[in-house]
Length: 271
Image (cartoon, rainbow, N blue to C red):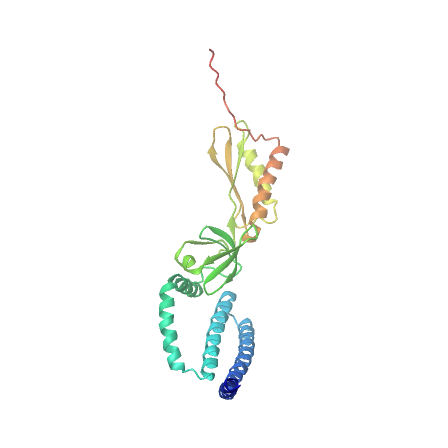
């Protein structure tokens, strides 16, 4: 009984001494989280009304969210009676160790900053980088998210994006679709060019400027090959690509122009 009374008294002393601090810390955290949430919401609205780029908006909001949450944690810890100066020193030492261990993450962070500054691509752009082709869905602090033509989500580190080659198909607002169509050697070249060009000019998704082109590109083993090259908007690329192939085949069939099959010669030795 005496031991129980001792523990009970110590428990009461602990609650009396630390209870208000713990309750205060919890209250500060709840209020702080609510303030941060509404502050970020206000910042988003303010940026949306301005001329800020969407990629920059999301990046800055993410940065601000991280900073405010870190500040809130420090305030909560100081409310519990922990020496913030000592805590900051510990965090600094730990941060150095973690920084050395996470050099790749720091490189990705630096890459994200460089992407925001130089803007090689923006949200919605169709790009090809690090072996991935896709539309930019989001530019985060450490990574860039792409949606591939197969509707897959590709997450690429910003460090690699900032230091590698990037092909942006959207910046110029137009893309060239390259296809090759072969016809027989006996067919009239001029007529073939007219038929193929008609396929391109009749497609509403093919741009008038730059004008589409049809030119002899190669004298192949069994066919005369034509480079069929329409221009289109990046978002219409696959429609124009598949439409061009199908349209050329149908148009050549209607015009009676032969598309030759591959030829194979078999030599037999008489024994």
